[in-house]
Image (cartoon, rainbow, N blue to C red; front, side, top):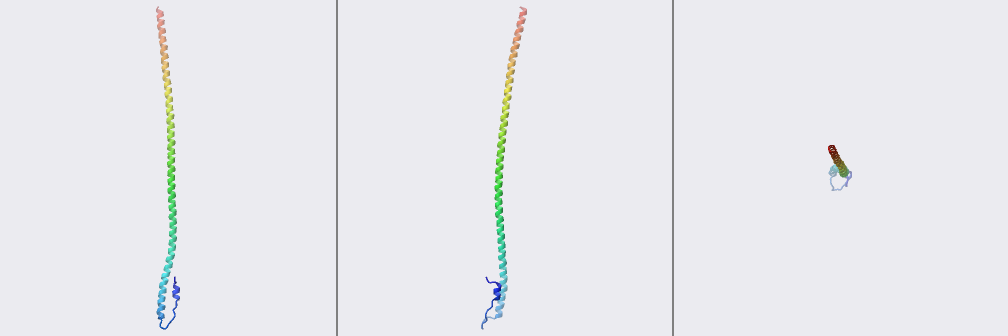
Length: 151
């Protein structure tokens, strides 16, 4: 690409029927000034493009990092959720086992108390039967004794 200094440094040879040098020099100066402005703008725009491309790369990198962080956070949340569910299931299972053990123990205690009650009931029946027999024999003895007295 031609630069403004090359435009400014150009010189044309003179000929007998050539262009008017003053007009050519003025036209070249005008072109030089316009081209210099465009050249500087182009250079500034290229630098700006490089800067913006760097910023885009930075933002893309940040976006990638954020996406990876979101995926990691999502995976971590899912893992925590699964672990909490497993722990809750474990606690529930232990509680059910403990409740079952307590119920079995209570049922065993009920059976023991019922056996003791049945044994006590039998003892009362046996005692009543013996006492009845004792009273019956005492009555018979008393009756016999009374009969013997009057005979």
